[in-house]
Amino acid sequence: MTTAVRAIVYANVGAFVITLIAPGLMMGVLGLSPEAVLTQGRLWQPATYLFVHGGVFHLLWNMLAVWMFGVELEQRWGTEAFVRYYAVVGIGAGVCVVAASFLPFAAARDSYYAVTIGASGAVYGLLMAWGIIFPHRTVLFFGIFPLTARVFVLLLGAVSFAQAASAGGGTTVSHLAHLGGLAAGWWYLKTPNPRPRPRPPTPRPTHLRRVH
Image (cartoon, rainbow, N blue to C red):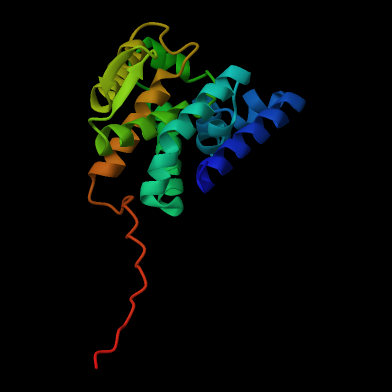
């Protein structure tokens, strides 16, 4: 694992252990509740929810995805740029959940009092970067069906949108956070603002030879 990906995995595992010891932190303090952010001033929640997971498999799958898609992005961009991007898409997904709670969809209205947890918003941001940078890479959908990375990301976005717009679509999985991660990643990589760029190649030492 690369430096930032390792740190993200360790931080999530550490937070998971802490919430096992003190489970009240998950729902009341660290998880993202739009109602708590807007009425109780818990402005840290759009960042802390990324490190809280509801079970071993929830944690395992998200960290597996961070490793699968994050390592090559960090190698390409460098650690600092990768951390900045991960923060933008993760927090951006949380902000989108808060903002979307005012939309006239059943799932959006329900999300105002619901608690969102998990790193999947940031994971979808990593997937967006993959779809933009490596559009023709092959991804096995459900481990069986080969799709290009671009088609894979478009398919995930369409499924998340359909689920978020349907009644009860966000009760167990925060499709709003998934859409927010995709949107934040697209905005960050497509706008003229400073964004991750590949690191310049390491210069090789120059050997001088004297000509007689």
